Image (cartoon, rainbow, N blue to C red):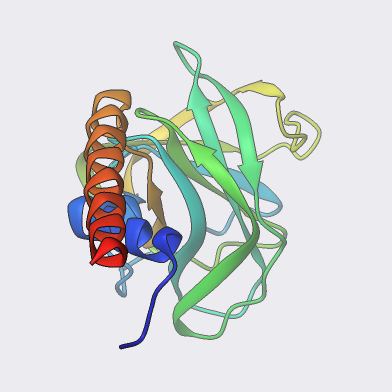
Length: 203
């Protein structure tokens, strides 16, 4: 009979108990589908606050629908009240193909409940949008008025009600109570496993 290390059995138990904690999920953003309009601003940032993060997560990838091949960069922002936002993380500047694009981050970006998705366009826009009631976004159109340094806070001008074709995916971080229950259960399972191994060896 093939033997498995206890560590692998514990990991398998963890996956069985809390699979969403170890699987990529859509954390924030919108459907990556064709939309009706593309920005004609140049060298600008947009924040899409339609669907902010609802849970703590590590962002590992992002998806867009691109209407053209102009470069775009993912930004993750934390609202600071009013129209102020702090940049929490960014991707490399990517050149998309027309259609749906999926990008993997070289370093995961932490995201907390309420954090929102942003995009930087080095030229004019490439990710299309629709006008959507209740979906507020913000633009900077002056390249000297914003700071793309992680940790910097910037003021954004309200632009209108729009939904962009971008989402972010990552690993959901379980709540402390869930981790406690998971740990208690795993320790119990590990103890039971150890007792069974000991009993089997004593036969």
